[in-house]
Length: 225
Image (cartoon, rainbow, N blue to C red; front, side):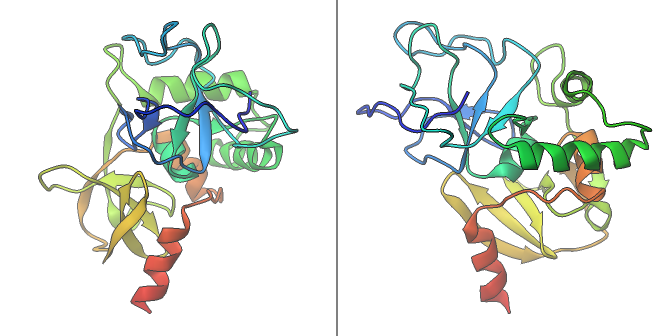
């Protein structure tokens, strides 16, 4: 379930996930690893599938000294995210085993956001997330919103070309890259944007779930003060 190390190859593998839900090849490792099932063949090449099950989780890179070889034949495909906010935008949730504390906080925030009498089962969360993150044609579900109404940890795309992903964090927008956040801007509260993070996850963020973000987001905040 968790990877502590992997094989080194001359060419980076296409297993780094963007906030747009796309898979790209880059040497950047990221802070978290994800699982959607076996998506690669015996040679480590991705096929057309982008998931094999609905419980998309985001895992720690190291847990109980477990060891994995990246894209081993017959084993699930290791995906990587710059940080937790990216994993949430791509439709994942915290793993209930290797990230139990984060999972519990996420479920509690989900319960508050949905006004549920009891904590939801992980399977119910996964079903709701799946409806909110991808269409039947495997396209990312995107919504619209006003920047001033969106909580920290949400990813958005601005009406600019080429399209880029921006993290809302500490009253600023931070431009995402696989290596971290490279630019920051003040938030225009009335601006209409495309929301990349699934709607129920946005509600969980608004209800108090705080994701772990790449250190460069905090560097941007400090540089602006």
